Image 1: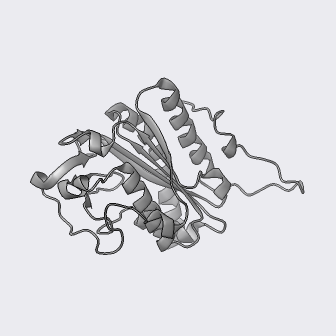
Image 2 (image 1 turned 120 degrees about the vertical axis):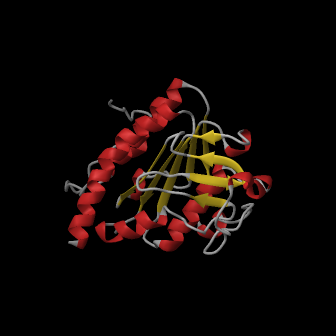
Image 3 (image 1 turned 180 degrees about the vertical axis):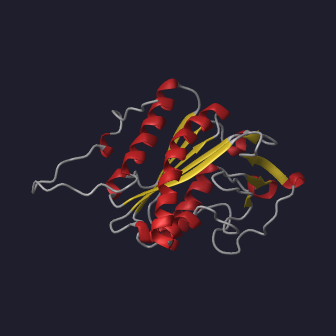
Length: 240
């Protein structure tokens, strides 16, 4: 399926005034594919929300209902303590990361939610798609490993546990965190805080969450499979 990007003028390539060609980062084409996917879903209708967050780390953490940072989470969230489960094997999940050395392709601070939010679905097991897109001048293959590791945030978000498997994102939100107001804006801001703190070259970050249906997550996974092939090539080139 081909995704159009006519509603995203910020991602169109513009020629340099000096006539020289700009080097295109390895994932730039996939940033555009994700934008096209989002636009198609928006036009289709249904639950679709966009939130603009602060861009500075100091402002991102202000007002968050939960703690963010190393050791913020106690670890295991048992089923009985779970408010919402995201991306279980039965529900379906997809997660991937895209980076570019052209931060103008990224809508810094933008969180897009396709489907219901955490507070709207107590006790549910939802399909879950997560796309993290980061941009920064100077970002390259040398930062690829650090960026990949940062998306699996371990114990850094209070009340949120990741039970991830390779290429998937299976996670839980605890009842205590939900009672404090934990939602996808909270998670998006937390991820932005962690990435911008862990990888200083990250200047812009955009987050997309999909909980609408297993089919929507699967369509997103069609893009992810192409991205994973590039990931493996980068790892081979970097480590071997």
